[in-house]
Amino acid sequence: MSYTKSNIADVEPVGGGLHFLREPLGCEKLGVSVLECDPGWTGKEHDHEEDGQEEVYVLVEGEARMHVDGEAVELDSGDALRVPAGATRQIHNGDAKSTFVIAGAP
Image (cartoon, rainbow, N blue to C red):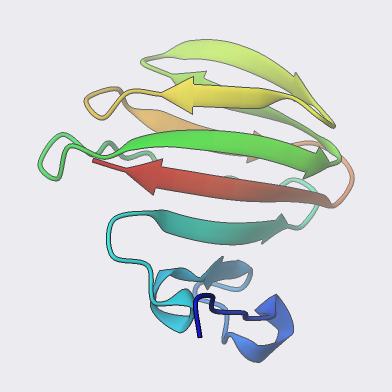
């Protein structure tokens, strides 16, 4: 078989709403996650300096704000934001539920 298929409903969420799909999909270099954020949720500030992973956050549904190296970036549904490995990032969700698809690779 030349492909792998998974459904987020079959992947136990971490921290409430983060579904890591790398392992279920058998990805070797690419990380893919789906993040479901409750209204008013704030994520952990972090970077990927040590593992060299840049990430792209695609806001599929809702409104949110990302702080990247201390700068606030407003996101609407359909927006995509690339964050380099060494930059700090933190999600601040808006007043409604939102859904992100996050892809990352070194």
